[in-house]
Image (cartoon, rainbow, N blue to C red):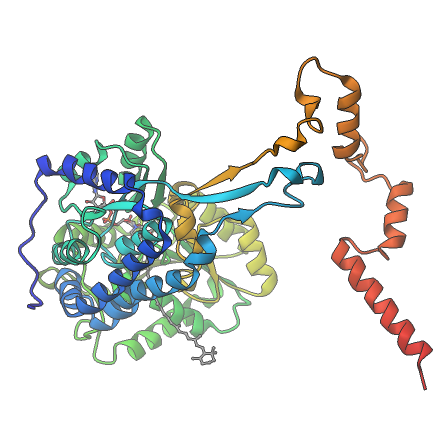
Length: 528
Ligand SMILES: NC(=O)C1=CN([C@@H]2O[C@H](COP(=O)(O)OP(=O)(O)OC[C@H]3O[C@@H](n4cnc5c(N)ncnc54)[C@H](O)[C@@H]3O)[C@@H](O)[C@H]2O)C=CC1
Ligand SMILES: CC1=C(/C=C/C(C)=C/C=C/C(C)=C/C=C/C=C(C)/C=C/C=C(C)/C=C/C=C(\C)C(=O)O)C(C)(C)CCC1
């Protein structure tokens, strides 16, 4: 089969309602509730990715100039690993969860409480352009695992990937249950006019807001995986400044920095700035011994619009380019570039670069750095800290983010089985690993009241009987061990528990303490 992608073809608008209706109809057959059926789809997706690997690698090259190395590591093989991991864990994720203590008080243990994991239904997955395979198909892995049917809308900015994705999904997965609609705003709007049981959107905050507003009209739940202006903090106590420079440069060179979770700017102790810049240049030389432009490893910017957007940030900055700075629109090439700035109003601080450029902002204190970062973007998608333990903990405590990495670039987002998502306006919800299954699952609590218990539980019936209520309260009510000011009162009960528990804070703690006492007693009494 040729590796050249078919000419990009948007899905006919009039076909979209039928595609959505077919996916809904497939869900209503209930076949997706069969775990083996879901596993079969995941296995088919795995082999489709394997078999279409040459086409997908070629498509990523033509759409983004993405190296085959990154095309495999962060796209095709990444999703294949997702399929394998989900296959290994799906049985445990999908089985009913029996509820007991402490969720269910002993009094109600006869009700056989359990949580049934049910697919939400038919979902819409909208993907971005920067990782057009991974960021579209990893949510699909979750949807399949949860038992949903799905319609995918790839980004039109990566047309070759979109066309091959359509082919591999529609040719290899269950017909009608999984479909791809290609197109841009009109097609996405036509999809948004349909009723979905969940929408999973990855893209800009601006478009995410449009999606969320439309979804709200039909009370459709959404997951939003958005962007952010992500800070990196480097303090005097960062330990290895050269390591910080190399690891942060990694975050801005992979995929030519078109990574929503990479750092946008670096807040660094002012005394470290000259050395940091030198270390950046050393790392740059290591990564690109023959220059970045000649390197087969560095992606290109996806299109002229984004190229011009990034170029404008550099044109508008009042800062000084201290590394890189070469651009070539004919190749959509932008050199990894660092800009030394001194104003929070600088274009390099105010916008998400979503490219291979970032700013360096000297600070006097960690207080100043935290104030600036919270001013620039209170809820970024990521943050990175290079300080001592106390400083890192303080940064994590005083600044939130979707995820964070200590002492590296975006490593919290470089392992496909740990939860990934934003916070505040950088995203709603999470996926990857079990979170992918959970994201498309309804956790349905079920109780079952046995007939023989009717006399035991008559308390709820009229005519109400306060004696029965008092009896129920005696069984179920816990006396407070605190007073009205919220202070724990160390009364008789407290001391009895303390003594019998040997001061342990929990049953496990008490057990372990008693075990130590008994072993010590045994060893003493049996000493030679
Ligand atoms: N949190 C995450 O995992 C990620 C977040 N992003 C964010 O996405 C942005 C870059 O990706 P893009 O693809 O440019 O995002 P985008 O928001 O422009 O497009 C995303 C999707 O929305 C569709 N779309 C665009 N405009 C629309 C409109 N007006 N109405 C309806 N649908 C529309 C596009 O066709 C595409 O499929 C950056 O802001 C980046 O931070 C990108 C990748 C991952
Ligand atoms: C080899 C042994 C060991 C240790 C091995 C280790 C620690 C290996 C480390 C490997 C590394 C650093 C791999 C890095 C991989 C990076 C990846 C996969 C990046 C992925 C990027 C993605 C998915 C980007 C997504 C972008 C998004 C969502 C966005 O737009 O933001 C031991 C264990 C130490 C000893 C045995 C041998």
